[in-house]
Length: 230
Image 1 (tube, one colour):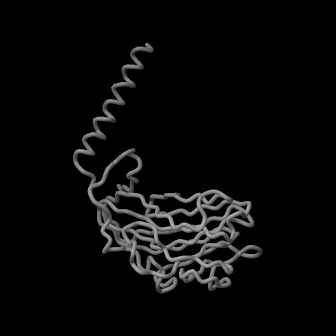
Image 2 (cartoon, rainbow, N blue to C red):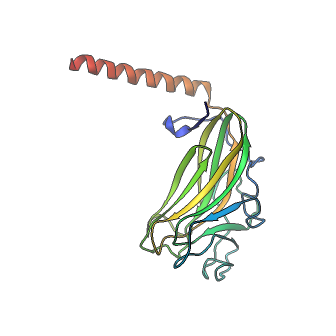
Image 3 (spheres, rainbow, N blue to C red):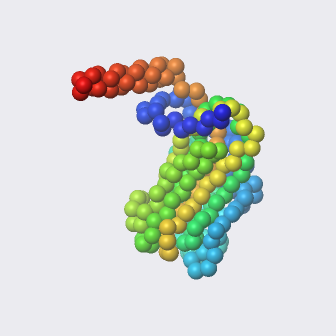
């Protein structure tokens, strides 16, 4: 039986240490080599379709496809395991026609992993009337941390997103996909950088014990309520 679970299922679960910043299991996660190592697939066509491209994050305004339609995008300064890597590029998702997906397959041993990325909302598209989502999928685990709502959230700020997942047993070719989905024309845009999957620390034994005790206490409370109701 294959197991791929997200740590968020257990609210408040603590981890000892952080992801190993030295080992990104994804190839070219900071897009320094363009889209090399990634497979780009799209269902887009026609009005509003603009393929995902890699642009420089040096603050210089350039027209699409070399930039964010004239808007200068600053370097990624979000905290995270790959902060300060000196990268100067990001993937720009601006299509108003769904979907745009970047993917690659990786080998994962059984254990805990962290999946994450940094995201930036440019002013271009920020007030467009339609929302969009950015979804990460590792194997059977799907995580949608970024709901891009028209005029909501802080524009022009790099933000880090991450989650812990557990894989068991080891899997040789685990698909890792990152999908931008526009919910209408025109929709919100997003830039993504420092996409990664890394090994993560095992939860502390005391954390597991407290979690199990909490589940046991919740079960006992439910049983008492049922007896009282009877």
